[in-house]
Amino acid sequence: MTSVSKDTIRDVYATTARRYEMILNIYRALGVNLKKWRESAFERLPEIERPRILDVAVGTGTNLPYLIEKYPDYQEIVGIDYTPQMLARAKKRIAENSWRDVHTCLIDANGMSEHIKGKFDLVISTYALSIIPNSPIVLKEIRNLIEPRGYLMLLDCQKFTGLLSIFNPMAIRLSKVLGGNDETYSVPVSDLAAKMFNPISRRLLYSGMFYEDLYQGIIT
Ligand SMILES: C[S@@+](CC[C@H](N)C(=O)[O-])C[C@H]1O[C@@H](n2cnc3c(N)ncnc32)[C@H](O)[C@@H]1O
Image 1 (cartoon, rainbow, N blue to C red):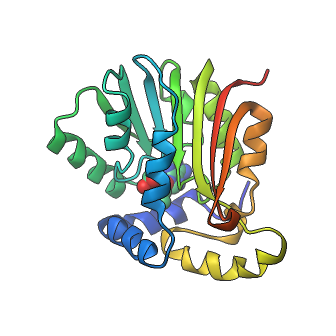
Image 2: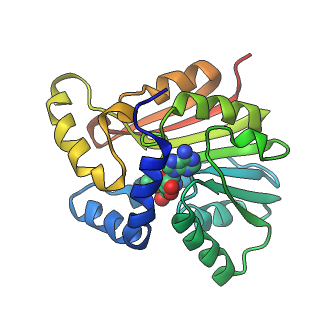
Image 3: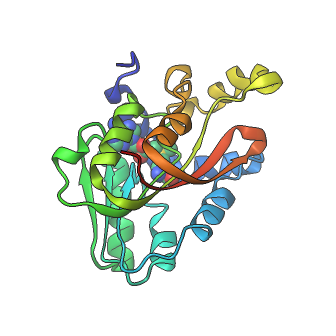
């Protein structure tokens, strides 16, 4: 168990929700182009017929337009998040766009498989596991919820390694407004995922501070 609590992170997002998209734009101005990496991650997703999709920590629903464009024949999209204020924005986005069969669930990603029925052909999580406490448990939860040959896409940040690690304290300070902290950033999410799911591709971005991973199938 981590000492950073899930409620601390939820409190951060409760106050940040209103400014979330603006904060992303500020990062972009600093050269951290989360939007561009998001777009290219979705472009690189495989073709899947009528997928049932789970977005873990859907936030304000930023991924939804990309998912719907990529998979117009989707069966269902479920977005879960633990912060009511973030999810309220996602719900508003869904209603404004009249998207069919897109559902949201206010639950903790730790333990989400108790609340969600059935399996998913595609699970995604973007810019989230690095700040969610106990992310190894979340990976196990994803394993419970994904079809045996289903796809998993993770897009997130991690600590710099090697010489660039001198920039880690600064990077973590800059991400504090989005719940960034040394403890959850230090979890090697990508390495752990590669032991549970078959890696298909891995791309490092921004000198290795961000990664985009695609997996297919559970390693049994
Ligand atoms: C940086 S935002 C990312 C949102 C979205 N995935 C995106 O790419 O814009 C991180 C999200 O993780 C959510 N979160 C944090 N802890 C969580 C938990 N334990 N379970 C589910 N969601 C959580 C926050 O509420 C927030 O919406």
